[in-house]
Image 1 (cartoon, each protein chain N blue to C red):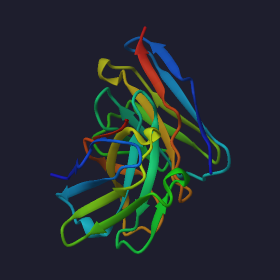
Image 2 (tube, one colour):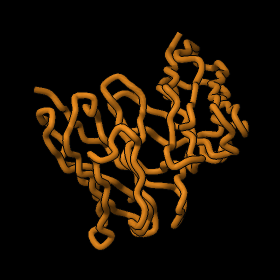
Image 3 (cartoon, rainbow over the protein chains, first blue to last red):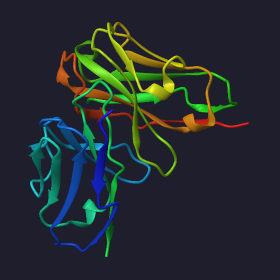
Image 4 (cartoon, rainbow over the protein chains, first blue to last red):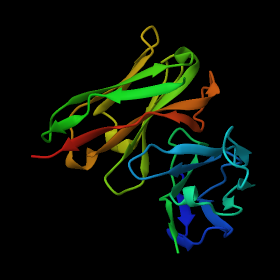
Amino acid sequence: DIQMTQSPSTLSASVGDRVIITCRASQSISSSLAWYQQKPGKAPKLLISKASSLETGVPSRFSGSGSGTEFTLTIGSLQPDDFATYFCQEYNSYSPGFGQGTRLEIK
Amino acid sequence: QVQLEESGGGGVQPGGSLRLSCAASGFTFSNYGMYWVRQAPGKGLEWVSFIWYDGTNKYYRDSVKGRFSISRDNSKNAMYLQMNSLRPEDTAVYYCAKDDVYRSSWPGALDIWGQGTLVTVSS
């Protein structure tokens, strides 16, 4: 199975900050990577697919990049609604795997 | 409005069985692959099973192979997860989710999620 490693596990930041979350795959997954946002007690929400394709309705301060084994999710200017947990997911195999999550908390 | 709604969760003793259901609405269900994903309390997301849009192929994570069975009824816009020989480590919120690619035979991103149903396996 492909292993997905996210970093950092926890990130403390302030409103207006620019933050970057990294996801690394144990082998190449081309651009078959998605990013999700999850708030407590809620289902995950798809933000980005194909590594960099922003879902309809997702604010443009979110962006994704990367291919192969290294990927990043960037939030350009943090808003209060962005404090949540973020997961990456690879879908280059029939056993799609998630990263362990990055909890973004208010500094 | 595109929507998924899970049901069937609850408490069960180890070795017991449960059948989860996922009701879909607002999109042509028969055109999309579907997933079950679970999340243990306070933990991350874990893919459980995937079924093709037409139900012809099914995939499972190793830890549930031989115990769980995924199925779908496109005439009823519904998907199911039959869970047998349940273990305490199966305790989690179970989500159904929709693949984002039309009639794909390959897993994709999950663009629509249900609200989840809690399964608790404990004696």
